[in-house]
Image: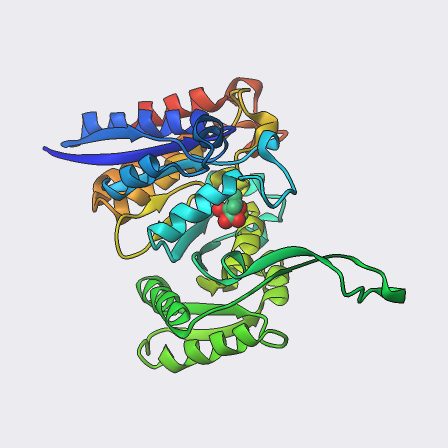
Length: 367
Ligand code: IPM
Ligand code: MG
């Protein structure tokens, strides 16, 4: 029997609640298929700051490095929210683990489960058949450039006014763009062969370089049709005509924003899974945050976390059968009308409105 070592990083807010459902699902898979899972639970985010002073303790990083895959919940919360640049922030833990593990490719699939067509705020005819993949560059760009905040003695304001100044830098090296673009082309080759490269080339120099590099390598992928699209237009097109997209590749920040937007096509941010891939161990996490407003209430949607487990089985563990089983279980449970609050609508009967734990149990029953 094959046993996989999974590093669990539940994090903050709803993280531990949805992670518990993911573990139930893994245990169910272990019973049904001839595989086993060993968990190594570690700290990240605000809880790690409380316990160790660090958002990503070395022990967590080491455990991640020595695992077959990392499953993460979510980080952050009002307790650690501060605009003081000298205070540690939970999000630094997430950014650091992405960087340390070299997870430059973040895959965020947006699929519409048939049963959820009514859950999207968009008209059914707009979201019909939507099936797209956002490939977000994850270890460069605006998130990782030089940044600083300082008091400007120069007094360059109106009437020589002094005050604070701050900057963040958007920087890319050629190889960083080439490798994410190749990843996106390869993804498109295996899908419907359409790739939208999203940038702001009418303003940003990094975008102009991005566009050039993407076009330079396009000839290596003759079966893929390449389109350039400006990021503001993409934001509009995602709600106007999302069916035109197959694969979208874009800069870190643009990808962050567009993926939250695109998640609503699937009904809820609570449905959007993600895989962060590099050359070594990979990390899987829901695209949503720690939702501190509903933490501890037992009402969070665990499906993005569970669908992240599906991606983990597919991409890191090569257990396609088990991955398919999760997908089918989720589809079946949704088809039967079970809904957490975020995907429920006026037609959802009271006896089909469920909490986090019940949704996890329903998926386990189907497995
Ligand atoms: C995401 C999240 C993170 C990001 C935050 C929590 C730092 O929004 O994974 O999309 O911006 O990357
Ligand atoms: Mg985000």
